[in-house]
Length: 69
Image 1 (tube, one colour):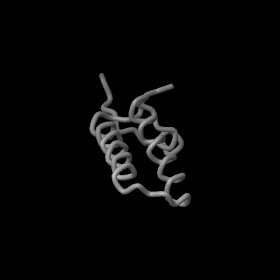
Image 2 (cartoon, one colour):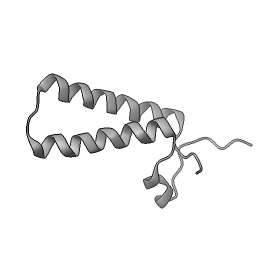
Image 3 (cartoon, rainbow, N blue to C red):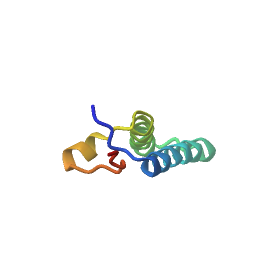
Image 4 (cartoon, rainbow, N blue to C red):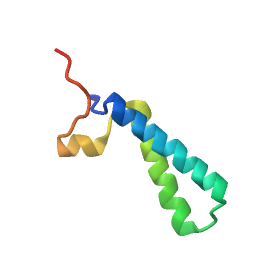
């Protein structure tokens, strides 16, 4: 597995995931149509941010990580 998520992208992903989590907790949302997709998105952002690899970037051929020489 080759890392393809750069530092700025990683920070943005984790910030959005934490913000989304607190948004769900603070609003007390009980709608199933909002909770499930939101949970999936937050989990995806957290996982890809922590691991440093994004499968969508891999399939699109994108990398936000700086190339070391």
